[in-house]
Length: 447
Image (cartoon, rainbow, N blue to C red; front, side):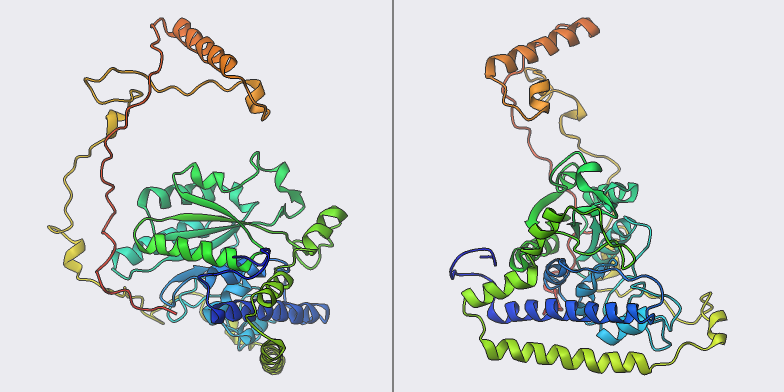
């Protein structure tokens, strides 16, 4: 059941979860509205990047995680920070470069994290680099027996970076408990998706690596939450990773300095009518999950919190000059120790020893059966110009094209070509999951 559906329906999402989702989306927007005012007052140091119209993605995905899980947000994921437990005052002071900010004023925008308590990895400006990093965190958590799931976000433009593909391949081969949220917000700065990617659904990029990949309506908070909850459960069970493409629209420019005049008027109007918060309010009304009093209580709670934390931020001092030379290098200022949730004996020889040999299905050849079978090849049919243009091809023509391709291959190789017969199913080789799924019964955490 989603906000775009008609009438009431049975849903696996509870009333309290729905109210939580609404609260965090509204808080996300209220915090960013206030920061826009601060930016215009020249109180924001550096850039300001809006997630207007994308709140359902940050909130719906992060809300599916447990407290023990790890996230690495990007510049448009303030909603995920709020869900994780970051206070609005930390976001205000960080953007204002105040001494009371998480980085004590040493970095602006969203470049801060909390490794010890909230399990937040600071954003990395080089797009795509968080994917291999969070894959590594997921692998480390499995090694230590922590039973965690990691999550990060990437935009449509960032999905074209080398780190995106290298990281996905690593996650796929290691079956890492890692969820990647691909926010397809239609624009990579001023370049539309259709000019940078030759596929309509960016989830195809995940499927190319054998990763479970789905596409959801990114403006439907329930759809985003349910897809994310299923993805987290799959990863927790040892069957990850998962890529979720959330289709949405970036309703502001790349940053506050960008008026986004390149966006077609009709396109903007289409997405304005699909505002995620307005849609969710209709959902709550249609399913009788709240009343006027409930809504007012949420609005009053948010207004009071934002007002209190804004006053704290504006009254906070700027960092002292001498701070500039401090904390440049780590010289024993803190210790970094692994948190083991399992016996180290499980991941050290002899218990962790694996014979240096592998079973490779069909020896990596092109045959569809094991040695001793009929040896029929498994070549796909050639793609015709009509197919590449999305047009239907009649069966006789398709067979003729395949036969023609076979004759061409025979001519070039000098070997006779056998016609393909129905492929026989090859016995599956059990997947080896490095270091297992962690100790049983030690799930911990939970919302």
